[in-house]
Length: 388
Image (cartoon, rainbow, N blue to C red; front, top):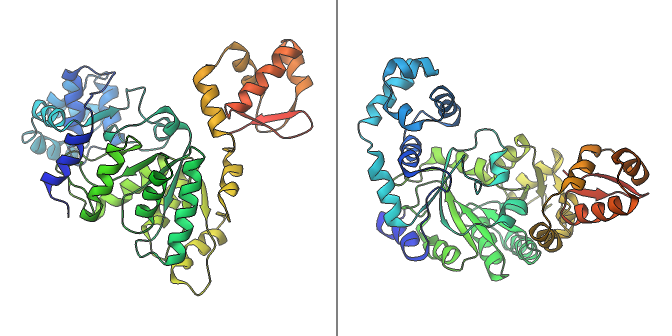
């Protein structure tokens, strides 16, 4: 298990500290403090936000009667009051400032947009490194076994490399085996990668990946993310929450190699529950590392032979062009009008011209830009559908 000292160095040396852009420090420190409280997760925290009209400081200082009126049960209130006595919000904020750890909350525009849409998205995220807008739009998780075969290594390297070359951010969990290979291959390809960890950012686990964590941050090619505050060790119960975030940050999850009992299968299941796509690389029926992926395929995961199978399914063939178009041309009234008329069933361009009351030239030009942005797809016969 990584030592506190070494874990701290990861952020202090290579990350730039900036606090929540939407919350004043006198409110932010209470969001941070609540993230340390066991028993108050996203659902109960939302109850407090609603009752106290988003005054988190008031929620933190409330008495048991007010907490009960907010909807917390007696057991949760008792546990909270005990924990509150041991947590000093101002000190929590100061520790993060010293270690140059960035805090994101539900209130921040920079909070990952894909993650924001899932159920039980964490109210607070702790980040070391850099995130950009493309990470929010074009990302895929790659997960699998820690005990990787040579076949699993080859497959993982190929997919991670090709995705990174196509400007798709590779998301994984910093574990040994498939996770490590995916992160390294993405970095080596000059792409971006995000590592979600199951501990506070002052504990890098496994210790063997301390240098990899440093590289992700120092290179400017990605970030370490966790919902867990400083001091939290990588205990077994934290990994399902980490897996939930890995899939939540991603358009889909690719499992490259997995035995029948693997944490990567939990990530795949989270992806399905979140409405995300699941992909699996077929393997030999006599390979223990192939049992999990082959079962995923039997259960409906997309079997993939190369990265184009994923790009086609997710409409990511034109990621560089989409990213450029999004940066240059923000959404306008014409786009909104056409979006309101489109669905997942094909609509002919003539229908769109007639119903939008826009000129044929305007509709044609707007449709081209919307396709470049990945908002819509041309499905042939001059018909268009929503991309997602």
